[in-house]
Image (tube, rainbow, N blue to C red; front, side):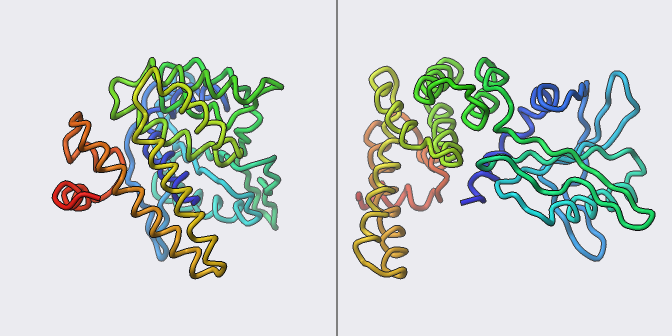
Length: 285
């Protein structure tokens, strides 16, 4: 499941990184320059986000960001390893941030002192950032981060309803709207808000078409129920897999019947092979 969260952030970071670092850690980049994604010596490391930053007030530096869903005690060693590789390769100041998006407050060590070595990175708990920092964003990729922020005693259902309403206003088309609602539903699982997101999306479905995403969620839940009835781990896993496949075929069939999206767009929206879309087109459910 953590791969799903990582995928969302990898897809969206390029769009949201400037407002994110301005609002959370006080950086003010005016330009980002691409760097190789992989750092390779005797071992290979692929950072979540790595850019050279041109700043108004500072000399150029390397900005390195990692996204964490788990409170990993050994993270400080991993970040130190990254830092050493980047310093050797680029000979520039390295600024490192770990954005913790999991539940609760991360308590991983952020400092390391041993002998003459002193090292530190910055930890940002997204659950401590006020939701107002994201909810009025004009970028859908940033807006969906509201679900991970601090609701500050506000009712979750009201915040989620506002997120969905704003997404509807910002998304340029149904394809993108479906994508961001799907991402919101995935991220909401980190806060156990996925049932509220599903219910509120159903309520708002009268105003805009999110049938594709609702069918997917329902189908996935049916798959889980099928697995549970098997009573054993293997049976449960098979049930989830079968239910998911059936849900995907229903989802594809529904999209094809609407005749609003091409086969390529359906495959992109649902993040599935186009061969599966073509198979449903030819054979049905």
